[in-house]
Each structure stands twice: as C-alpha cells, then as structure tokens.
Image (cartoon, rainbow, N blue to C red; front, side):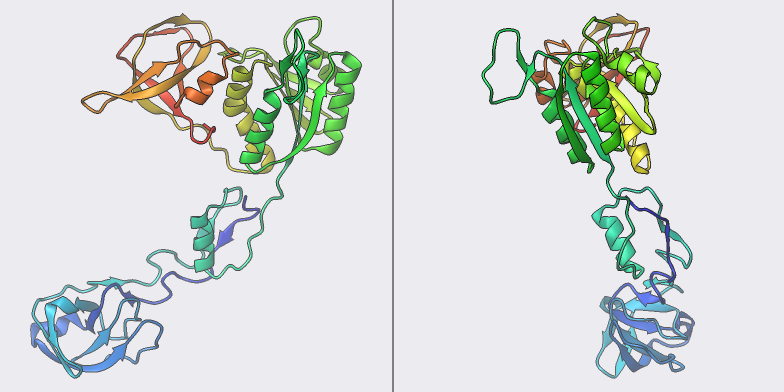
Length: 367
C-alpha cells in the first residue's frame, strides 16, 4: 500500500518520439516534393541533430523526432535506400509521433497514497525513475474464536464437539489480503477469559476479530466483555446471514465480532470486515463490484438484506443466470466452496424468476 503520493518529475515520453519505423520530415515539404535526401539516421536512444531543410531523417521506433520535423512516414509507404527516400503517400502533421508528455506530464500524480500497488503500478513508478517506494507496514490482526465446543483439527472429536473451521478461514483471508495475523486461538466461554483475550489482542494488534459469542445466549460473553473494557458502537445488523455482528473499540484498537456460523462469519467479513481492515491499513476502500444477472429462482419477501450463494449458468442466448445452492443454512460451508459468488436480495422485496439481480463474484475466495 503506497504510503505517499508520487508525482512525476519528468514527462513520459521525455521527448517527441517515433511510433513507427520510417522517415521523419516536415509534412509541409510534401506539397512541393516527394523525393528527399536522407540527412541522418536516428535509432532509439540517440540524440538527433535538427532536421536539415528539405531533407528526411531515417528514424526507428522510439527514436527522438528531430527539431524541424513534424511527421513520420512509415517505411511501407516509401521507396528508399541509405541516401534517398521517395514518399509515395501524403502524411498529416503529427502522424506517427508520440508527443512529449502524451502518457505522463511533469507534476502529474502517478500513484495515490493508499493505493494497493500492482505490478503495473511498479512499472509506472519505474518509468518515472522511482527506485524505491514508501509503503505501509501491514497491520496486525488479532483473531480468536469462542466456544467450549470447538477443538482444533487433528484431535479426536468427542460428542458435542466440532472442529474450529473459522480459525483457518479468518487467518487465511487476512493473510490473503496481506495482513499480519496474531493468533489468539480458542477462548473458553467465560466472561473473565473473554476479557483477558480482548485485552491481550488489543495489546498486540491493530485490529481485533472474534468469531462466535456475539448472540444473546448465557454463554455469549463477547458483548459484555467489550462493554467492560471499551465501547460497543454496533450490535446486530439487518442482514442474512450475519445478524449477530458487533463493532466497538478496546482502547484505541477497533474490534469486530463475527457470528459463529462459518457462512455468516465469511459473509460479514467480506462485506463489512474487509472495508474496515482496509481503512485501518490506510488503503483506499474497494467495495465489492456488482454485476447484473438474471435470477434462476424465485424467493419470497425478506425483511433482512440477504446474500444468497449461487452458481452462474449461461443460457443459449448468452445471458447469465444465477442458480442458488440447495441448502442456504448459515452452517453449510460447502455451499461457499461450490458457489461462484453471492447475489444480493434487497430487504423488504421479493425475487421473481427472470428478474435482474445483483451478483457479487468470488475470486480465489474473495469478493
């Protein structure tokens, strides 16, 4: 993530240069003559002399256009040898010339602070002579799960226990996005243990994410623990899956409490958590891109905004149609592995088969 703006101190290209192999000349001379003496040869990387009157310069792609020339005739439209050239077709002023600053002008901002740098951005910075780039250090995200029923994969499963699938999910998503992870493991379902975990996480991270323990049961201790140590700004959100969501602060460290069901945890992380993490990182926000598709199903009115796991099919006429997974329970993680993405079902509305709906594609597990 770029830690500052970068402005160009040079123009790109630095001088007018030829876009083709051919002959540089003054286009106005063509009104009186077609035959020219070849007065110089200009390969890329050389410094040409000014163009002699009524002459042409042999020039190659990337070569600097000499003073006095205002067009380049491509060699396919010429008859030539080393000393002379005959121009068979007229040419307009500016033809086949890449003008100075066509790509980047002096002082132009090339990269904005907060931009996630791609290979293209690095190439662009290199083109203006930047050898080293100041970047943001990756934030550290503390992650813990709550639930006495959770055990780690690899251990024998006892009655009433389930394997902790949210831990690898959240760690993997954070690492995939470039953040460092502080793994707090599984926290027992008690208020003192939850408070201790939150305090430890706040001391060692820039952002805290928990999964589970944010509902209203007697064993859900995250909400009172956050209220005891800091402030709780949000609790519950009108979306499905993902109603039990908490957001607050432990001292100066933001906290996001995700639901325990894995699909709910995934959806809330993607639609809310990711934007919060990007803001904390100092990165420009990248909200999900939505594409129109046709609904291959009908669904009754929903009181909450719902995100439905779907696979995209293509009709004979090329239109894209979304078909939902057969089981949309928030505990069915296999549906996310199967799905191409999510469709958004707006609150207080129904979906009718054939209508246009919004599709959020999944790419490598990320929206």
